[in-house]
Amino acid sequence: MTGNLFCFGMGFSAKVLAAQLHAQGWGVIGTSRSLEKAADIAALGYDAHVFDGAAPLSDASVLLPATHLLISVPADDNADAVLRWHGADIAKLPNLKWLGYLSTSGVYGDTDGNWVDETTPVNPNQTRSRRRAEAEAGWLRLQAEQGVPVHVFRLAGIYGPGRNQLEGVRRGTAHRINKPGQVFCRIHVEDIAQVLQASMAQPDPGAIYNVADDEPAPPQDVVAYAAELLGVTPPPDVPFEQAQLSPMAASFYGDNRRVRNDRIKSDLGVTLKYPTYREGLKALQSSL
Image (cartoon, rainbow, N blue to C red; front, side, top):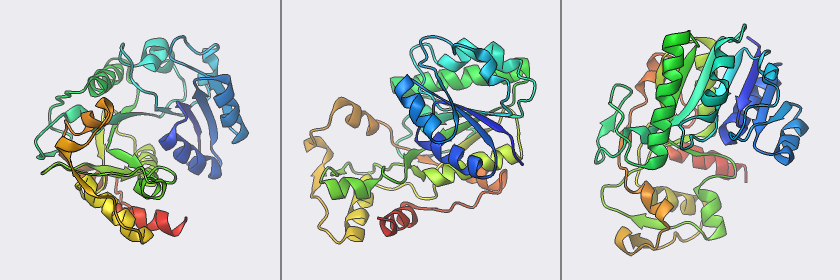
């Protein structure tokens, strides 16, 4: 299968997917918020355009070749800029087979460490997660009302090359913050790309998928394992109450949940390449 992928927002996850598809012979079109960053996209061999969310694309006809659309831009105060500016254009695309919206498992809010799955009602308690929930709802309305083949992916915390706890330990910026009972869910960026490709191969418009690995884990354990791999002493354990966190960092500890990933396995046939942080960090360490 080949096609033309249009990425609104060529961020960390989108770049990995785009590179894999481009290597398979796909055409790739991407947007960035500035001319400078668009030039970086063009340097990868992709067709690049500017879209900053404050205004529509200068020429919406660049969407026409798209067979597959990935929405990978942050939600804003008005939910989703792509939907706002180009929802009508997208609904008219003649060759569109699949649209993926990258959301967050944060839409489930805080469950005091209990498990959630795709049937769990959304209950976000952070502003950024409320915006994502509103954006999800908007895209799913477009699917229900206009027949656009929308798929929603609720991503756990993303890590991968250049963005992982090994880097934090090496730089001396990693912290082992201990809040009893707190766990975070995570997913390697290559497994995100794997899930997206599996969905593209078997579209199911209106479907929602949790994208997380098999083991929610205390964040301090992940840092300790990264230090072990690097052969260094881990940073000291700091009680949450004594940690001097920024408001943004502290807000992540306001949500505590375990995210089930059964659907990506049963419905899409995915076998995670990195089922826990141990396999993921070990592979990243071996490539340093």
